[in-house]
Structures are given as structure tokens and as C-alpha cells.
Length: 376
View 1 (cartoon, rainbow, N blue to C red):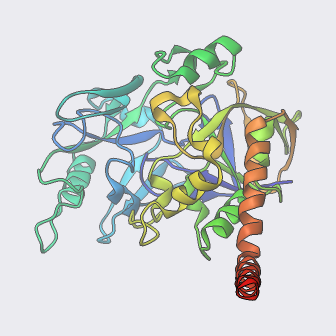
View 2: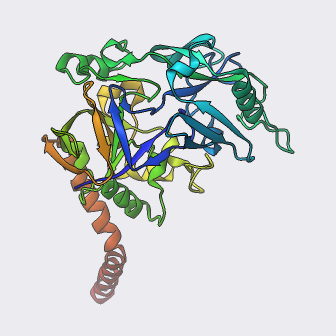
View 3: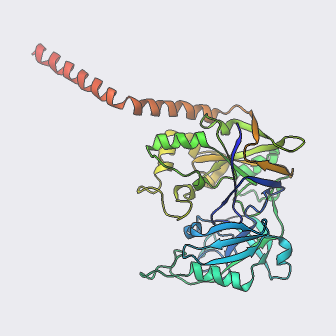
């Protein structure tokens, strides 16, 4: 098995960049979610919260490209207008400070969850004016691009520190459990949702497509850091360690933290933010029906959702990962995956033989009917 794709998302919620290689840093792939967008007034999204595509799906319409040997990024909106942003922390030293919350809170009640805060520097005025104008744009029907009915002020925030996973408040059972058994380790993150790395398996996506009877489902919708193809669906849920052997002296070791519960983002198009299918949550309904165990893990508590992909950490170890690098895994027994495989097999066999079952049922009814008439 090899690394098939590497993806970096320099600005949380916006489009990613497919790269041939990436430096693995203490917080995951270099520059991944190094920046985010915040609502500095708190009228559309909770004030100074790192905005995800969950909150503003229109962020998916912002294309991101590297410039100048990855010293800058070029952001291009769906209207064709662009803005450049520096990537290096040093270029933000003179900018204003802001503390950004890694959370999901209500703008009205203040309720919700928070994993902590990260010290940041604001983008410059030109960049902040650009993102404010873009997200406040109104269409001919008067609808704002950000999806709410109020204008507000947006800004870019560049992280200048990190959030250590072992310092998470114990707001979900997974955090308490992972602190106790060491899964959180020395891992750090910037504006990724929960962990430094999300790994997805193409074989599992192919199985999702089969179960959902859909021809096309872009892997980009999963917003993974590393994509592999084990040729066996759901095998990624059994991997305890992943060893990536490239040009490093020793293999890079990635340790499993937890399967990733998914929100509505993977049900949306990665470049438009619109739902992929007429039945908006079709794919997750299919998965929940086929694999009920995947949607009710008690470790996630209120975050429980259908799994797709697995969170991994690198415990602060650094190195280079390239597309084509060899990948080896060490598996752990998983009752969840084995139960899912049984249910999945039943579902697929039923679909495959559904017409045959109907014919057999009709034949049985016909025989019973003839037998009943004969007895009369």
C-alpha cells in the first residue's frame, strides 16, 4: 500500500491543495489549517471562533494555491477576485493580536463546545476587507453569501501557537479515555477539528458508493490529510499504527487516536459547498442503516456521528511524506469493524439478489394459492 494523495488546507474551511510531498510537523502537514477566518463581531458565527465549512458552506468556493515556493497563498473567490496572504508567521509579527476559539458555539445563547483557544495574529486590512466583502456579498434575491441575514466583519487569523491535545477540557468521553490510555500523546494541532491528521481509505469510499448506489463521490469532500487505498473497506479502523517509509532514515510512525465522526461537510461538494445529492444526507443515512454501530460510539458523546476516516497523530515527530511512499500498518482487533462487515455483507447480498428473492416469494405465493384452491 502507498500514499496515494496528500492534501493541505492552509485556510480552514476553504479548498485544499493537492501536493506531491509535505513536511510532517508537530501539528500535522506543514501549513495545514495554519489560518482560519473569524467573525470579529459575532453576528453570523460566534465571535472569534475558527469558522468551519459546517458554519459557512460558501467557504468551499474559495480556491487556494501556493505561490513563491509556499511562502504565500493566493485565494480566489467564486467571483474571480483574488487576494494574496503570507504563510510564514514572521510576516504577521507587526499585526494585531487576536485569540481564536476552537469551538462550535451559538451566536445567541453562547452554548456549545470548545476545545480551547489559540493565540493568533490578524491578517492585514486589505485581506480582511476582501474576505468581508466576499462573504457579505448579496445575490439578486438579497441573500448573503455567508448564509445569514446580517452583515458582519470577517478577518483572517494566522496561528502563532498551537493547541496540545492533552490539554483539551474533558467535554467528551473520548478525551478522558484518550488521556488515560495515552492516545493523545504529545500531539498538537492548529485549526484542524480534533487531531493533526485525518487518514481516509479509498476502498471504503468505493464501498460507500456501492451501498448508496451513486456513481460519483469525490474523496475531496472528506477533507483528509492522507489518502491510501488498502483494497479492503474499513480496514483503516483496525490500524493501530501506520508506518510511512520514504526518504527518511526511519519510517514515520503515526498512531491511531480515534475514528472520525462526520458532520454534514462530507455530504457537500468540495468546491461549491452545495449538497452533493437531492436527498441531502443520503450517504450518511445509508451508512447509518448499514452500520448502526458506527453512529453510536459512546466515546464521542454529543459529537457522535457516522464514522468515515480515522484520526491519527505523529506525537511531535517530523519528516517528509511523499505521494508514492510505502505504507505498512499494525492492526488491532476491532469488534466494531467485524460487526459492520457482517451487516454490510448482508446488505450487499440482499441488494444483489433482491430481484431473485421477489421472484421466489411470488412463486411461493402462487404455490400456496394453488394448494389452497386444491384443498377446497
